[in-house]
Image 1: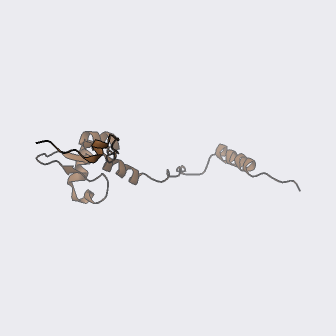
Image 2: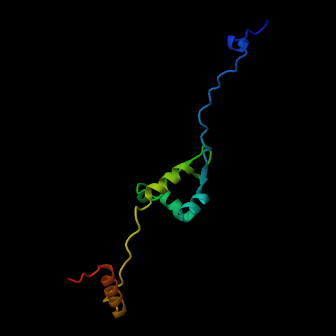
Amino acid sequence: MAIPALPEALSGKPFVRVPLAESSPPVRILFIEQLSLLIGKSCKTIRTFVSHTKYRDKNLIPRPFKLPGSRRLCWYEHDVLAWIEFTRPAEPPPPRRPRGRPTKAEQLSRQRWAETATPQSNA
């Protein structure tokens, strides 16, 4: 029995090709060693944050999961990158002033800077 051909195939015109959905990047799973390198905390600290209830809800690390049949902690890379972006401070903290009175050199340099920063007008 012959397979019937579609009318578009018999006309000789090329088919209109519909592109498939945009291929999403592969999902990468990070383990605790890779996460520690990425966020700058030791493996022991990460395990402490995961296992102790007093740290669990403080958002100190991204939320982990475990693969079925495995005991290893895992994280999705895109979740970790989103967490890093979310927890990054908006601007660096201001520099701390040392205790005590400023030295004479610091006082003079501030005075010179103030004189050059504000132009004085001669009336």
